[in-house]
Image 1 (cartoon, protein in one colour):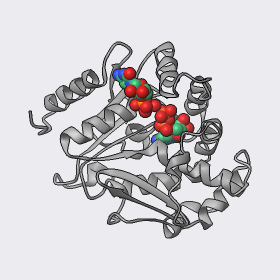
Image 2 (cartoon, rainbow, N blue to C red):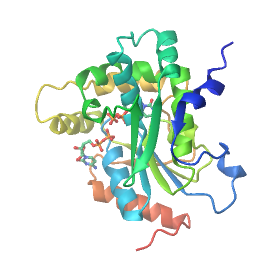
Image 3 (cartoon, protein in one colour):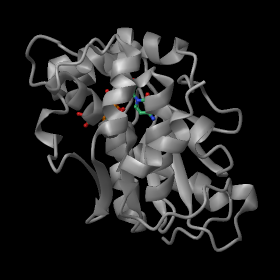
Length: 249
Ligand code: CDP
Ligand code: CDP
């Protein structure tokens, strides 16, 4: 069996100090706070997580952007995203760096930041396929843990509360009806033809074998269908206060 996990970190370097990847049960009380926000596509995760992080003065990590960035790199290199072994090999050999800057996360491949390309329709089409490759998930999970090791962080994605930080007591799952989510994405895309097949992505994300999109047992679920971004953030802050987290205000 290939031990890709042990080889990933040598190339998958991260600028944040790398501590041992301890689960929070092993961490001292002074460990940084990690607020996990998961949910399906266009449920409002990014808007809510970014606003929450700004209000709390925490770092903000959009883990979906990392999966999108890997997908961009795979496509740019001409590797078939459906062929998991060459995809894993490509990423193992690439020079991948990530860091937090002005509170937000950045990832580069051989020095190139693919950020302007992350919402392209080809990325929407293949990202869930690439994200279902276990070696890719293992490599990115390590990087995400490194990023949050040294500062309080709000991190959003699909498996943050269930797999990346399963021991954090601060887990939220944001949902909205499929109709509302489709409308939000369409508006976001400027009213053009809807390229982002969000329900297809949700299906692939929920049915993959490795860390699928699930509602963590101890997550607080928020249906945002009829809520504004500030409304969702307010509900999260209220919940954090109830849990005894010092969030000000
Ligand atoms: O913004 P949107 O919800 O449409 O997607 P995203 O958060 O940018 O995530 C893009 C894709 O990355 C998802 O459809 C998943 O396939 C993958 N992803 C994942 O597998 N695990 C994560 N923690 C975050 C994203
Ligand atoms: O990150 P995710 O794909 O879950 O969603 P998003 O990119 O944060 O939000 C998708 C779109 O819905 C954005 O244009 C948001 O401004 C909008 N939105 C909204 O109208 N109401 C909410 N409660 C949340 C998001």
